[in-house]
Amino acid sequence: MELLVSFTLIGLVAIFIHLGYSVGLSAREKAEASLEDYQNAQASLDVLSRQIASMVPYVTRQEHEERPVPVLLFQATRQRLGFVTTWSAVSGFNGGLRFVQVFVANAEPDADTPGRRLLLNERPLPPEARLRGSVVRGVARTEDNRYFAQLARPRTDRRSITLAEGLESATFRTRARPEGEGFPLDSRINPRRFGGGFRQVFQQQIPSGIQLSLRWNRQGPWGSKTFDLAVPVGGH
Image (cartoon, rainbow, N blue to C red; front, side, top):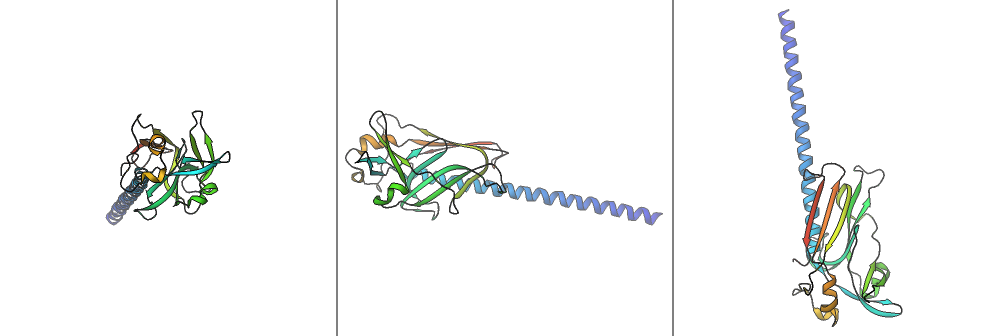
């Protein structure tokens, strides 16, 4: 009887030790996964912030009603952002002009993380002669006779970079530049490249800042379902 009681106690102690070890190991794995999600999200949004801050007001001449007109390669809607930057998310440094599109897309049906995704497409800016069709799909005119480029729709492919996933929504907002305040040109930008009317027209078309609002289906990497990121444009 004493041996039976002893073996029973030893078995119970072993079970408790195993359960404690399993709980501790599970907690550690969850903590490591949460830390990895946090670091990945932080790195992704840092990439986006650098690219927005290094935005370049690139102006090109495109055909509209059979005559060339200057248009700015910039477009911002609630679901998409397209612009030219000098900072590359692929190489991780400044150098050359890059055309970037950030957009929201639905996850694939068999994806591990359901919901919507925030994606980034980046490529070297094509030569002037090849912009139409590959980057610019058309030119529109506003009521006050200003022209703006209608950029090609971004497509998801194997080169698309995932900035965030498992999202319920992602929304862009632009902050208008105060009247009379021009885009802060730096030494890398030659104003002559943009023609004589650049300062009066196109500097006002570049916003002073971009705000990105993210909402996850579940708790996000920062411990909340929502996160807002505000980045000043031209803050090199």
